[in-house]
Image 1 (cartoon, one colour):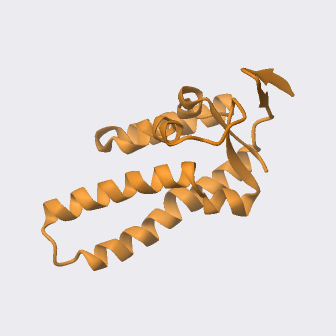
Image 2 (tube, rainbow, N blue to C red):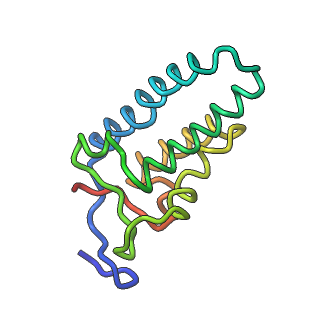
Length: 135
């Protein structure tokens, strides 16, 4: 393992495990949480419901990276900071910036998928100085 900025530079996580973890963390869980939130907010105005749902989605992405990602845990992966420290809230936000801006959400997902498939890391990982590795 190489030393980068005083931290470890472990190997990238296997793509298959990353895809499986992301399907769980970025598709299954948001759908389940979205259905539950949608049912709870059914009598709320459309604008307020939309704002709450977008805020909830952003909160989930940051929580997933800064605190706990069930899909990664199930597949034996974890998110690390390249300097060896705990992933910070700032890194979690930077890592997901392409995914939290509603206007570029679809484009962001496409860019991030291409980045993982071609470079083994998301563009957001490069910005946040993080990496997904085998736990």
